[in-house]
Length: 354
Image (cartoon, rainbow, N blue to C red; front, side, top):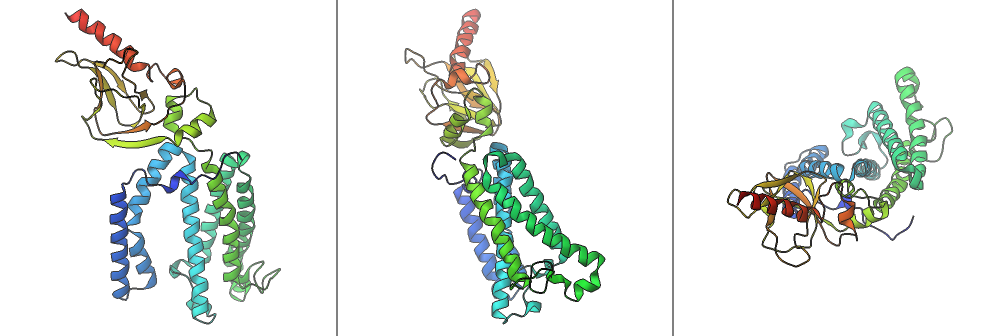
C-alpha cells in the first residue's frame, strides 16, 4: 500500500467538541471513584465508568458513518474487540490473584461468562470481519489474516456450543475445554482462559493493522458527491484537508462584501444563496448535503452581491487547498463557478425590477 502511516480519522472527535469530551471524562472518573468507594461490585464500577462515554461514542459513530460509510463500522468492531480482549485480560489477572481459581475468575462482567454469550459474540464478530473482508478485502490483505484467525476461533466456539446444547453431560464432565485447550480433543499446554486470550490476540492484532491500513484509503462521502470527477487518490488526499464546522440557523457563511477563497461543502442541513442588492433579498439557490460553494470574488477582485447563509442548523466542510480544477468537477454547476453564475442571474433579476 502506498503512502506513509496515517492515524485513523475515526480516532479523532468530529461531532463532539473537546469540551464535551473533557466533561464526559470528568463525569466518568467521578462515577468510577464514587462507585468504588461505595463498595459496588466490579461490573457496576465498570458500567458506571462507561456510561458517560456512550453518548459520545454514539454521536461520533453516527457522524463517522455518514462521512466515511462502512469504515465507521470497522472502527466500532475494532473498539468492541479491544473491549472484549480487555475482559479476557481481566480474567487472567483474576486467575493470578486467586492462584488459578477459575470459579473466582470470570472477568469484569462475570454474569456474561456463559457459553451462549461466547457463541453469539464470536458469531457476530466472525460475520462482521467477513463483511469487512467483502467490502475492503481486495485491497487489505490483513483482513484475510484476521478472518482466518476469527474462523479458527469460531470453529472452537461452535464445537463448545454444540456440546453445551446437545451433549451437556459431557460438557460438564470436561468437554468445556473444547478442541485446543488442555484436556480438549486435540489439546495443548494452555488452559481454556489462556487459550482464548491467545485467540483474541491473534484476531485483534491483524484487525488493528487492517484498520490503520484502511485509513489510508478513506475519503469523505460528501466530498465525493460534491466533486465526483476527482480520482480516488485526489479524494483521499483532499479529505485530510476538510475541516467540519457546525453553524446555527440564520448565520451568514459567506458575506457578499467579504472575499473568500475557501471552498465549502454542505454535509447536512441547508444553505441559501441570496442576492443582497434589494430589500427583498431574492433567493437564488438552495444548497443541500453534497453540494459545493465558495470563492465569491471574480476576476476583477471586486466583492460580489451574493451571500450564503444557513436556513437551519447546518454542518459544512471547509476545504483548505482544494485540488486544481475542483470547480469543473462539481456535481452540479454549483462549485467555485456557481456563485458567479448565480450572481449573473441576480443582476438580471435586479435589472428587470428597475
